[in-house]
Length: 261
Image (cartoon, rainbow, N blue to C red; front, side, top):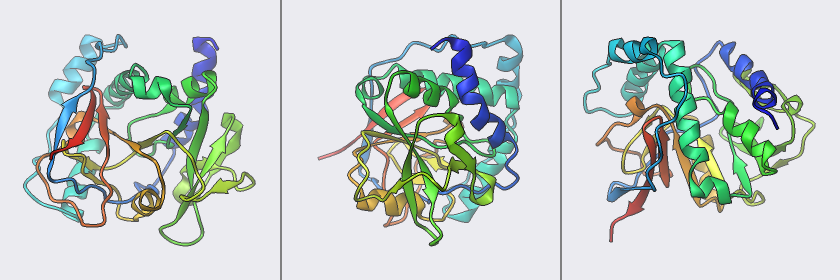
C-alpha cells in the first residue's frame, strides 16, 4: 500500500472526528497501579515528521493549565482545557510522532490483532495506525457502544467503509457488523484513549466505565494508553475499579509499566 493510499484509508475517520460536536467518548476513568514504576521500552528514534519551526514555536507558546492535586471531574475538566488550547497543527504533529513510536515497537509488530479507537475532540489520532494495520494484514477492531449504558463490544473492521456515526457522533463500526463481547474477543493489543494518565499506568477516561468494564471481563494483556505527553500527570489517585494500562505512548515515546514486587 502506498503512502497516498494510507492517507486515503485514514482520512474518513480523521475528517469525521473533526466534526464531532461533543467532548464525549465511549470510555471510563482508569488506573490504579499505585505501586508501579515505569520501565523504558527500547528507545525509539525521533519521528521525522514535519517538525517545522512554526510547530516548535506553537509548542513553546501553548498555555499550560495548572494541574493541582485533584481527582475526578476537576482533573478531567483541566485536561479538556489543555487539549482545547493545543493548536491543531501541533496536535497533528504530536499524533504522528506518537503513532510512529508505537509502529516501531516490537509489541505492535508482533501483534496479529489490534483494537483502536476513532479520535474525537482533540484525542491523539490513530489514522496512521489503522492504515498500517490493514496494510499489514492485522485483524483490526474498534469499539461500538451497546444500547445498555456502560457496555460496548469490539467489532472487526476491514475498510473505512465499515464505519458510521454512532452515539455522540463518534465514528464506530456499522450496526450490521457482528460485535464481540469481552469474553469472546481475542485481541493482542488495545490502543486506549483517555483524558489523564500517570507514569504508574493509571488512566482517567470520561466517566462512563466502558473500557473498565470491558477490560475487567476480557483477556487483553497489552493495554496502551495513547495520549499527548501533557496528559501524563503524576502522582494522582485512581479509583478502585479502574483498570491500569500496561504501557503509555505519547509523542515522547513508548513506556512500559511494570509492577514492583
